[in-house]
Length: 204
Image 1 (spheres, rainbow, N blue to C red):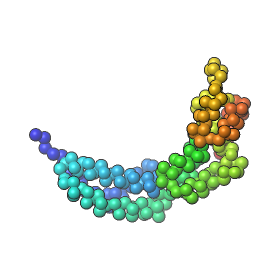
Image 2: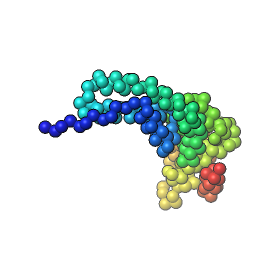
Image 3: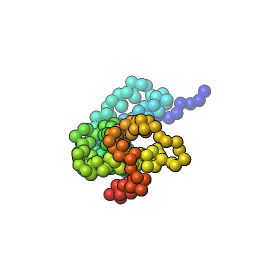
Image 4: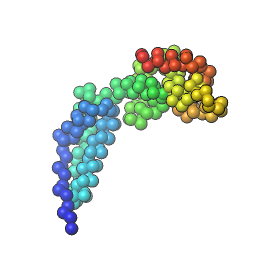
């Protein structure tokens, strides 16, 4: 019969704080993201402790006692500026747009990361321009062009490929959050202009 593994060290607020600092040294994240990281750390400890034979009620009580500490650590990291939902949202908005994500797709991504609607709207306005501004419209068009280049659509279609089904092609853009008007502009664009617009946007 194999011996049970030694119980892992019981976590405390100090070890959780160290884990938060180590994570933030490597990754940008949101308040919700940091909570999830620390919560997963507690769950992994609980799984190892259970495997080592620690009673489930002791594991559950330890985890429950440390949950308030997670909130305190997240608040502390936010006060220090190590966690900044607004800054994270601005950076992600620009980087995701440059990889072919529509404004709607960026909004959905940030919501999934726990960024509230007001912060998301302000971040998008700061990084891409307000929705009705020409800068925001140019960013949306450039993102759609990046998507077209990835999918070899419109101006980026290979010469040896069969003619695209217009409805199917428009559907690709729609599923990625782009309006029909933006999609049509992409499909009607000259290849050289399309490439120039992508280069210009990514150089901003």
